Image (cartoon, rainbow, N blue to C red; front, top):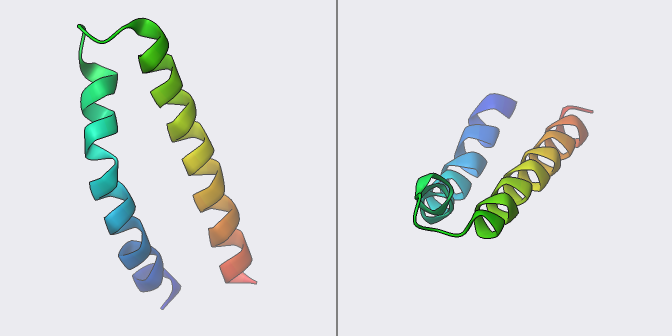
Length: 57
């Protein structure tokens, strides 16, 4: 049940990340913007991990 909830929760987040992924892989985008996108992915992964732990308790 938790896996189903997490997959339904992560799907919209993944769809919202598509523009960020496009920025991250585009060579014409300045490097500081790509670094910012990388940090955004790290923060998001941390929040998803914390949420998964809290929901599993």
